[in-house]
Image (cartoon, rainbow, N blue to C red; front, side):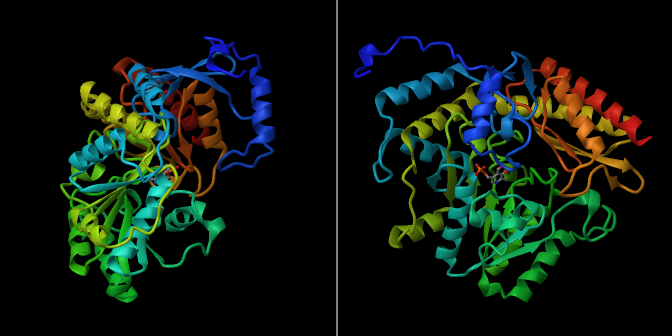
Length: 452
Ligand code: PLP
């Protein structure tokens, strides 16, 4: 074909079978976090709202918003329109050009975060890479404090900054990362209970700072609310204390809101529940709801001012990509116009009650944690001993059977170690939520029979 006129107006139906698609994918592409020679990958052919369709024509309820990013659900008509419109106008502009969608998005991000300026990336890992670099440039210090139960991405720096076992294969990784313990009240690393707690999860960080040398520490990098390591909702005064600690030592506070940001907890940022402002926020996922790849590193006014007179050492060919920025502008407008954060808060409160009831009802549910439509069940063999249903970093036959039950019922859920998440799109209805939770209850009842 040589011209647009010669192209068919409607593309032909795909001729490949689900098996052929899976086979071709596995033979010629590499999949994340998996041994490449295993079972054929699942095939996805489309979606609508809270559901997507597999290669065998089944409809799945998406209780994980894909990778906890598809906040407005599958194939939202307004998003499709906005992306098409931008594609028709201008598909690409180099990163040194000003464009309308880039400027609009930057201004909107400043408004909703209370910060000043944004450096755009293509995803969350790159956003964290740049946050670390910016913190080092601005402070002239090199160490970064992160937490053990954290994930910040899969590029070299962000993977090193992560605390969970996904970092082990790249160690020693990038130098200068120092790790501290998490606000994990169910399994307090300091052996405290709510009665005896003196917020050692913050005070021990001060001791680490002193032992490392306060003048060597550029930033503390933490997830807004820890996501993929068990959804650890911090006590209400954790962030105010952490903010004060950073201020005391001139350390920048970077919050990674890649998973917890953009309505997942019912606010723009999870830290807005705690009334503090970070110096740098990183985000991705819910920024475009996954419709286009985009990440952002949003900085405070003093940091923005620093770069008015100092070089920003870094750039990306696709930084500020106009189609990605246009998608994000529309996505943020959809959140507001459709009241999706309100839905997350309202249905999140209902979800919280349902999860508490499950904890009371099923022997295998040790703890439940939730904020908006960001929630997890922590599964145990024994509520008294809190022995996890699968070890941290591993799996177990019971977790395998639980996941298989959800799969067989076509409920798409995220489970890892002894955690089972409930993170549906923010557009989900109560009826859909109930339908998915009914299947979760069947799966929990099954696990109870296995551990009895
Ligand atoms: N930070 C957090 C908290 C995440 O959950 C993730 C991905 O799941 C990342 C960073 C990495 O983002 P990306 O996969 O877009 O690079």
